[in-house]
Image (spheres, one colour):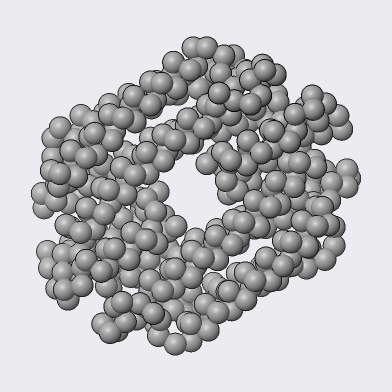
Length: 96
Length: 96
Length: 96
Length: 96
């Protein structure tokens, strides 16, 4: 439960839909790796698939982050919740 | 299809089972985020969940990597496939 | 040359001083690795030192990022340069 | 002081020289950022420079890692220090 839920800083509907579509694909990809693991896969083939899923998740994260910056963070001073938003961001972000 | 499949360098059964269990949990976690996205989640709550899934995938990757190093890479000189294994590893690894 | 230099969005003096001190330490650390390399170091000892320097640079980056969010990004809507700041941030940041 | 120093698993001279050259460039880059910080830089310009240094350090790390894998890790089973080398590697590596 987030501290700023009362501000109703919801994820933008279009971004939410985009994230949903990407995560459905991530789920399918994870199911594919699970199927691989029923056989006798080569380690590096598994590592490559995990890396691909991580890349897909990075993209979901980037999309949500960009939307959050654009719709909520840049206007935080006006709304008065700047300290909370900066603190929260520093927890999920990592420079570079 | 991996270059070294003919060496039957399969993922260790115990590690495969561990990876399978962790990935089932990852799949459940992704389904949980998909459910969140049916409502009106706060951006940072979504980012936190994605970060948690990435952490879980990192652990699967670490487990598979360690097993690969231990069972296949350290004996590559004996088997004669060292160049292939190093090249493959450098593609999926990233220092730090 | 940054697009928003005309807004004089300078790095906070205290953060600048903190970054300067940390970077002097980073420089000393790099000089230490250079000295190691004059001898016959063990690979993993070099990797550990590089990893330590990367961690120190991460901290400088976090400090500068937090200051930028706090002093410039949260007020971007008021100033009218939100699009530029978000775009710039997405280039240097990477989710997770 | 590393556990395996007695094996004299030294960094390859050519890789050591390459690492030295790259780290001299890293040091120069850090000095450049220190000079920036004597003025009134824009936060994002500092972040970009730190990111560039991190990229350069990643490359040094990759070079040393590849050499370590090629010259020491793939022959660890023959030498009998496989457990130590795998354990050490897992500490400095991070999957993806």
